Length: 361
Ligand SMILES: *Cc1c(COP(=O)(O)O)cnc(C)c1O
Image 1 (cartoon, helix red, strand yellow):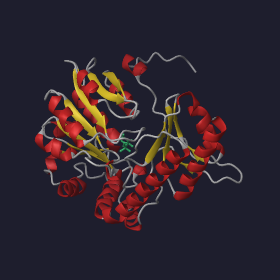
Image 2 (cartoon, rainbow, N blue to C red; image 1 turned 135 degrees about the vertical axis):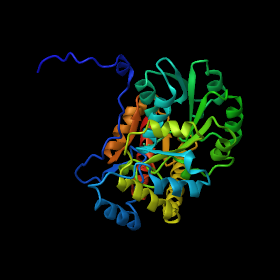
Image 3 (tube, rainbow, N blue to C red; image 1 turned 120 degrees about the vertical axis):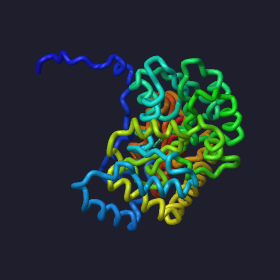
């Protein structure tokens, strides 16, 4: 090997690496569960698998670059014009397109922290600057502080609701007051990757806010409730000219033909998928209730995961869970996130959490 003289952009030095959820670790005599990536524990629906197999027969051809059928299906189900839909390789892909379309080096992107770890990555890749606003003591967004963090350099504000990895949502009342206060030149991205799991009162009606304001857009995905994480398909609902900028910045042919077909079939099968979402929500309620009964101060979760604000004990807890077969997601010394998985995995989580409390008090 010789040293490389290839010159890379200095901005890359600021890009943190995405740390994916670890795979489940096999151990003798212990069932392993991967509850580290907020994936849907249910296998694909037979009707979805069938169109995936059919689409596989034509993979010698490029996909439909305009993503026509899926875009139309989304526009119909959301009751928005087709020109307001932009698709991408997962909503992370679309978010990257948002930042590429809006930010020059030195521009600022405001978002809560802790939040989704893709935010600092896509921001730094554009050479833009992250302005992170700490969550409150209930692990919720501090929208007033986020408003106050907006400067002349701010191009984008991201609101993650429900917030990954902590779980709470912002309310519609809060979000409406916030978007009313944000200057109309700043793009507000409402990241709703977990919207299908929301059951709380005064849930954000983000599409209503987008309809009323050209600077508000919504980001959604097929990866979580729809169970298509492996296929990489997400979308934005945005006014022109934002939506057309997102089409310009998309990877050409990025959404594969298999992903397009599976997403269309999943929209059509939403009633069936909704039963699974409801079952996961019921499990979330059961798990949060059990944990609080044990004495845990877990924040409210409107998504398919629970947050343990463990501070310096995060590593110990993640290790104890691993011993019991559960691969959780540890966030340094902030806390640990556990995805609501199959019932057996959730039972192990509650058991491990109870034992951990008893052994540490
Ligand atoms: C999982 C997730 C996404 C979606 O990721 P995909 O790229 O669509 O798989 C977006 N935002 C948040 C906050 C997430 O947790």
